[in-house]
Length: 581
Image (cartoon, rainbow, N blue to C red):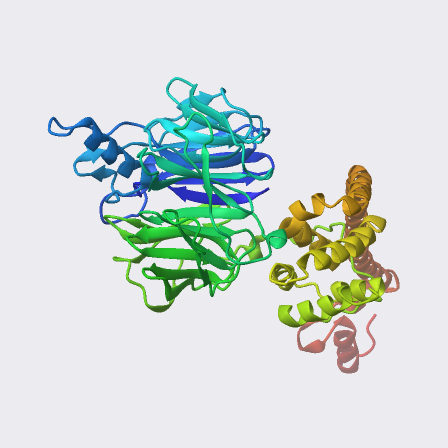
């Protein structure tokens, strides 16, 4: 995984930027200005460089300190206020009803350690080592705590100040691929505790306060064939018992009412393509981020689209949009791995289409693109003929569901379509088909065999295989009849990876030889030019010397004024005075 992403804390006072890059893993915390003017307090930015092997798996903001209790408030009132601070019901500057909350940012690493960073410290504030390797983190309604979900489906609540586990339990009645955990603001009846959600392709309601049988319910599916359901990727509380959910590689926003988990959810199809994240600005106004921009929606008695927000650069989209009390709505876009901030509006009311000017200067002209790279080209016999996803899905379905499946025709069709967005959308349409399992099996058998047999070639088939595994990898891994193909594919890819160092070494040698040849050519050309110049100078000198040597009397070359020389003068004198002696 590489790139960068941002997360804003519940107060709207800090933005964390997580950079995931080979050789550079870094966490940055940007303080959002709490007064009109510049959007970021530049002099207070914190940067935490991680070691090369400290790979970030997941992260979350959570509340550090308890809410200050006034004498009039009892324990219950204080607890309620603390819950509100944790779930983000703040006025945007870290205060609610006169109480201050400090945020912490937890980052889970692949080695099992969790680093906790504070906006007020130059180094990690806490190092958590009491839990197993995490796949997901989320805040807790208790200040100074967060929840963690491990690879082995163990749920832990961690007290960061003491590096101890407050709660620990293993999920029971859930499917084996649970990979996400989220804290909600929905209070479980009778107990008064806020419920957790754990999810893969299904979503389970969990009561973390119980000593056993913590899974208390399962949310209804949205009416799709269960075998083709993709895992959930995002969850965000809307208000009260309502939460929003998004599946991987999906353009559909799903609204669930946790108080009625058996009810079928409300769905909304985004205009911005595949959803990459969802954020709520304030009240019932949310933003759906997709491949083609950001869509502002209202969530009240359903979901209503209000606006599309983009930058004025066709290839740059907003990665995050949030609300800050003193500066209104702020958009975040990325220049490489660095976030850039721009004010969008004073309030959250958007209507229509927006093109926001950003200060972006292309660096294309500054890049050295002359360095040769090892490239792989598609077979010359393959002609590219890209078609729309709906048409592509229709043609591919006819081939894969026919009485006799023509592998050659399937490979030809897939190879001739190399636009990745079209491939992704076509694979996504499999989930909506009644014969999804047959389509996935047949396509995987054909493409995986072809890719495994030709690992040294790169064609659009590799993109087909990538998105097929991303979208339906869980289903494919459970099919016994596909186990041998998976094994063959893994073996072929391993062999291909063993060849990579040799290819890179060969590339280095070729580049060195080319550079040496170019250097010799430049030296040779420069030498030839110098020789030509020297030859021209020598020829000029030779001409002068030849003229000088061939002249019997140097005085013959002397030209006097009016074109006369001594001979002319002697001739005239002879005519007048007679012969000159």
